[in-house]
Amino acid sequence: MEKVSNQQIVDAGLADWRKLAQALHARFAIPDYVVAAKFLTAVAQAAESASHHPDLKLTYGVVDVSLCTHQNGLWVTQKDIELARTISAIARGHGLEPQPTAVTQLELALDTANEDGISAFWAVLLTGTADSRIHDSVFDPTGRVPGLWFQGSPDDEGREPPRQRWHFDLWLAPEVVDDRIAAAVAAGGTVVDESGTPAFTVLADPDGNRVCLCTSTGRD
Image (tube, rainbow, N blue to C red; front, side, top):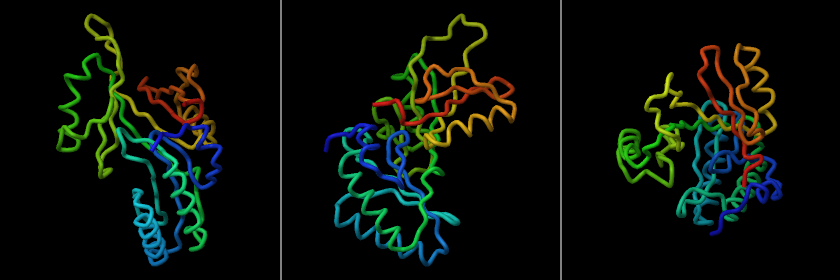
């Protein structure tokens, strides 16, 4: 199926869901594990009927759900939007409270001028197989480790001091980013670069270590 744009996702009006890096994400608060099990069973049945399978994670107090289509990459398609609506209806039927602004996704980013030379190493190290590379990234299909993407950059030979090569990309719901930035600054951080806002804002901790706060807003 064809990839849908971030604007099409917004226009779909999925109140319980937020688009992060690759997928749609939702979080539902649960009163107990018995109710959660009934919800997960109903979602599993709907997924089998749709021949489309979300990632489901049950932890204390919440169920996290993510949806994307594995087709020449990891994209959101109309099939994901339709199943997201179905899952939201199931959650309402079980009395579960959606918590869309609580969704997050952590990715690792590595600046490199030699993606072809290093990507197999990181794929095998993180996931056990070189087949986990998709485009410019490494993804663990079981979700044990964060995704790693390779950000093309010039070689650092002769550069003093060397650039920071590793950084976090923290994906958040768009409506919580300003508060998170303010809290980080209040905790001693600084805003380094706002030129990419609202798609991403670069922060640094008191030692100068950088992190990007990312949203789907302002992206295709």
